[in-house]
Image (cartoon, rainbow, N blue to C red; front, side):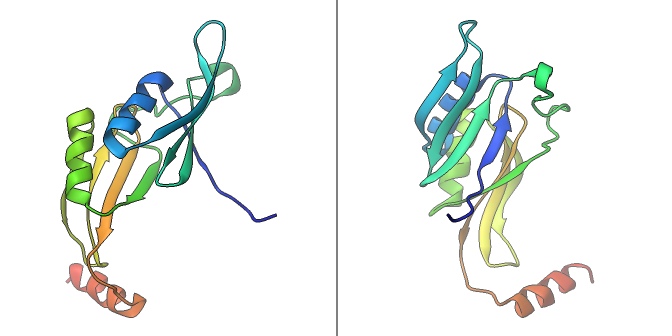
Length: 144
């Protein structure tokens, strides 16, 4: 059986997060498990064929969303066809811009947003193939 890795985010309001991720990133809800109280114990959405797992806070199990507003404890990288369009869509859906979309030394055009639940999303698309050696050369040049 192959190893699979899933991102699992605790958010302050899973139902709202699912709606945001659908609007901002084209997520499709697979399912959710809801307690009688309405708290969502587990939900899964699919973004670009990959599964993102979500849950509401469960302090009794030490599951809490990011503690400091605007300071993401997790960063997710979303590789898309058009970073400018996806960042614009995320902002329209309620994300906060952390870094404007721009061309980067490592061959990607991208930017960063923080979703309304405190998680940072790097959104980018390839603009050129860059070897690790060339990437290092460019990275070193940034510090000169």
